[in-house]
Every structure is written in structure tokens, then in C-alpha cells.
Length: 67
Image (cartoon, rainbow, N blue to C red; front, side):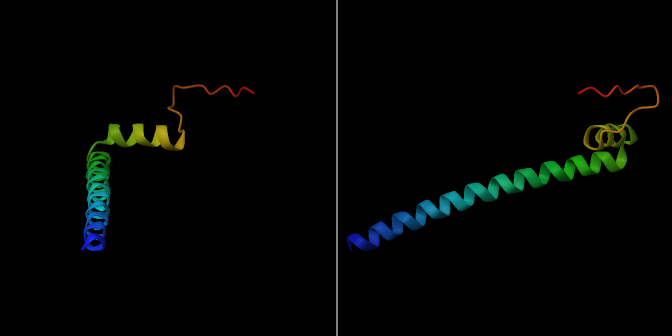
């Protein structure tokens, strides 16, 4: 009986951890879907995302390389 209670507690802890990870993954997925939708529908957001992620330069910007 004692062993069964220990296994039950372990299973509940494992379930709680898995449930928490699932909730985090779903929240991250929703956030990415929202960002993707914004980039697809808003050209300014797409330009900003490209500039940040791909290090694109705007036409009026000057890049100076330093070491």
C-alpha cells in the first residue's frame, strides 16, 4: 500500500510537470501564431522583423563596421 501511494504521488508530480510544459508550449505557439499573422498582414511589421532578424539596413541608414 505504501509503495502504491509513492507511485501515485510520483505519477501526479509527473503529470503536473507535463501539464505545465504543455501550457507553456501552447502559450508560445499562440504568441508565434499572432506574430506570424501580424507580419503577414502588416508590411511595417514585416519590415521591422526582417530588419531585426536578418540585420537588414533601411535605405537611409549607414553601416559602419567596427572591431
